[in-house]
Length: 473
Image (cartoon, rainbow, N blue to C red; front, side, top):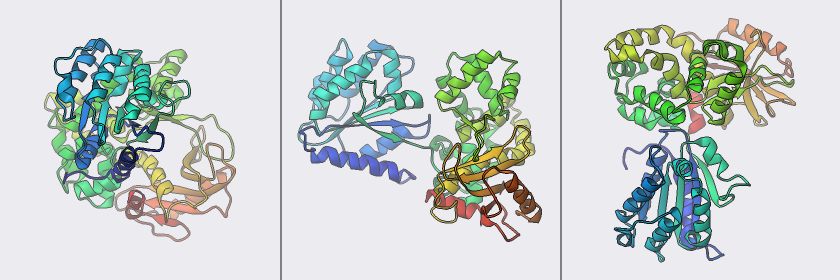
């Protein structure tokens, strides 16, 4: 489709798997499986649909529902397969299988033998939750039936932890599927999709999180404030709705985890302050919530990167869109719903510079690590930050040969993401002092200055938005 942006690596990986199916393999088992995972609303289903449309494969695309039960899942699966363009789809009309074993055998009979086809099980974790035996049944049918057909089985899921476990050693599907992680659209994709210069594209990425659904409603060429001024007047906009729906799907009945996530989203980063902001939670309750949030990959727990071990763990929301929503939209939905989005927008304007300055840091670290030229030294194996309990010093960028405990520091840097204020001599002097306080760094450790508005001094490697965005191109 003309409006489909990005996803070249993912489409290439799917096409490679399709070629393997078409070639038939050497074992007489041409059927292949892929386990596709990614955060909610990053476009996993859209990617698979685009792949199937481009390849022209006969296919069945079944999406499970969180609200279903085993009987409803079976009924909807058979109805979907019967309405598909598989050559034998008509044989499923009127069928009422008693279990997944019978349903999958009906599917096998409908698949072509003389050309490749695709079977998509979208939101597969719901099927596993609704039927404890589904995973084992799928493995048995894949080994005995599906793998003998020229079919590409695509298992898609948003529960990152559960999808990761599918390939664990003690699970039925171990080593039967190739794993694929679908990220959100990158800042470079955002720049192309919205026709924005690099600096503005990073702003749009921090707000949208690279979610296609949000970007599709973002006017082309519009800056972040132009977009937000309209969005806060519409409670049904994708930007406002996506955050709440994601939380409802991840934590349908866990109020404490939602409280803890809200505390982290509001800016609290240490265990003590998070627990206090969440209502003075007991340590055991706080630990359980933090473990749940990190297991679901909604929150990341990070430690300082240096040559010395540290227990100064900090927590932050992993998804940029959810980070923005929790801090500046979610707590104020009542304002927006009663027609006072102007209050929400004014608050965003007041806090934008400070919020953005911290939110851009993990994006910058990721970009520096990805860059082929102009980023961190080639022998870098990890990029993080460094801090102490009292934040003296607090260093934005630390590059090292490995993490979380390094043998050697390869670079130290600072991020100054301000309008009309370059990285200057005062910033350089502060960075040099911080380098002297970082375990493992010395006067020979290279310095990096990442600035939105340029660098006005010598002695540092200057990196701006134009250079950073090349990391995804």
